[in-house]
Amino acid sequence: MTPVARVLLCLVGAAALASCHLAYVDGAPPAVARVVATPATATLSVGDSVLVQAVALDDDGRAITRRQRLPRWSSGDTTVVRLASVAVPNLDVGVSAARAHAVRAGTVVLRAESGGQRDSIVVTVR
Image 1 (cartoon, rainbow, N blue to C red):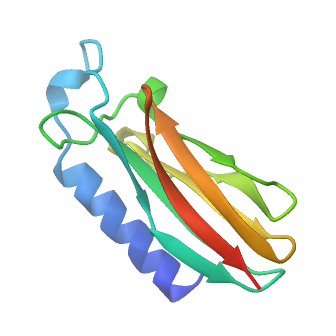
Image 2 (image 1 turned 60 degrees about the vertical axis):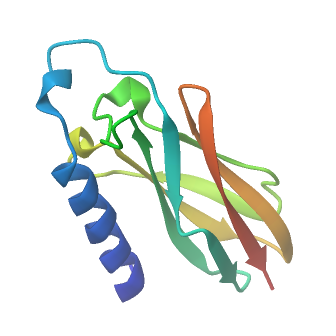
């Protein structure tokens, strides 16, 4: 994992953990108001990869920490970028992560979706 990816993982994880609302533990998770994915864009060379992360937020901007609300990743073109799930050490922070592997040159949109809300990342492979 690159130093930048480690920093991003720590920042997103810390932000999600800081915004957790423990009332969700026993009750049903709230509706997803929005999904936030990072980084917004990435430029890779064939063979490189980047860690992408997303979190589902409620109306108050707090991370939704239930597994059924974790964003799911998809690639608009798996011949350009393939995604592989990455285990997040503590799923209770609400972060969904994947490694985006550059397969061939092109531009693709990666989507993170939860509860009918989504965010996207544009990846360019050179």
